[in-house]
Length: 77
Image (tube, rainbow, N blue to C red):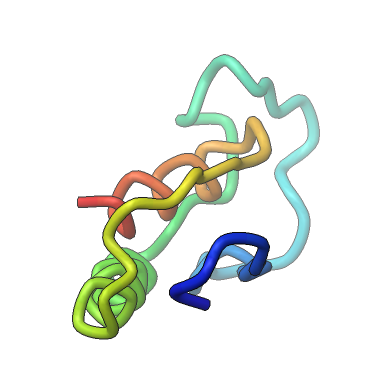
């Protein structure tokens, strides 16, 4: 994965529960199912693993859900 052209597809880290609550809004994280403290720690560890393996400069894409954006931000550091 250190060479151009490789892709890592990662689902969000631990976010307790199933499905978002009724009436959730993408523009309001308080209405969504979000990462737990462990999920945030998992995201940081994923980012650390990439950097430890020489992968420090990569494009990061995420869906609009807060748990995904938060995870991507934690991974990038």
